Structures are given as C-alpha cells and as structure tokens.
Length: 164
Image 1 (tube, rainbow, N blue to C red):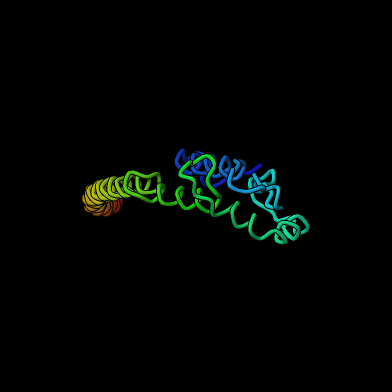
Image 2 (cartoon, rainbow, N blue to C red; image 1 turned 135 degrees about the vertical axis):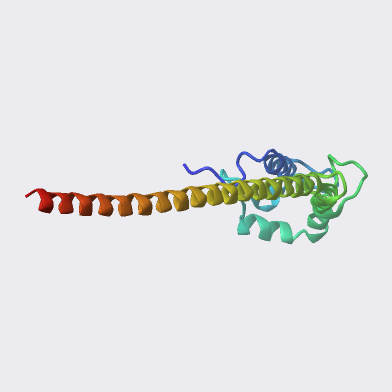
C-alpha cells in the first residue's frame, strides 16, 4: 500500500474525518434521514458512489429529498446536508478556520525554507571561493615544483655528461 500525499498532515486528516462524519450523520427534517437512504453511499476508500436505483426512487419524492438537503433548523447535528456542508466549508475557510490556519503555517514554513536556502547557498559560495583559492595556490606550487624538477633533471644530465 502506498501512503497518500497528505496522510501525515493533521489538518487534512482532520478535514477528512469531519467530512466522513458528516456524510454518515443524519438529518431530522425529512423522512429520509441519511444520505445512504437516497443512494449516496460511502465506499471503503472514503469516496462516494451513487446507487442510481435508490436515487431514482428518492427522486420520486422530491419534496422530502429537498428537505434532506435544505432543512435549516439551527441545529448543526440535524440540519439538511447542504446546510451542513455549507456551514462546514464556511468555517473551514474563515479566519481561524483549518484552511486559513494551514495556509498561514505553510506561508511561514515557505519563508523559513527560503531563508535557510539562502544561508546554504551563501555557505556553498564561501566554500567554493575558499576551495578555488586553495586550488589556485596548489596549482601555482605545482608549477614551481615542475620547474624545479626540470632544472634539477637538467643539472643532473649536465653533471652526468661532465663526469662521464
């Protein structure tokens, strides 16, 4: 099994849990009490499916179907599902809501990451400059040693010719 993208994100998991509970809750404003009674059913993976046969039967009783979604009796537990979902969405995106808080936290994290990235880039640039300076000094030293080697080799050759 592969982990989902937001599996460890408490805000997302919390929203999923709230939505799952809302889908499984009941409404008291209609003869239909739950979404599964009209064919809207939650699957094992959390998705929703529509049972067309059940929905067709429920559609024949349009007034009760409408009440299942639109009843607003000022009770969050027994309101219609459209009212529940609208209230949930409004709360989630309002100031102090889960989505707003998550957006603020992500913006702060982005700022911190940008700052840390700048520090890492600065350290890398300083290290590169130091290593280039050391390499240049080493290159110069190697050139001097190669010249000395050539001079010594020439002197040894001259000495060997004069003694031989």
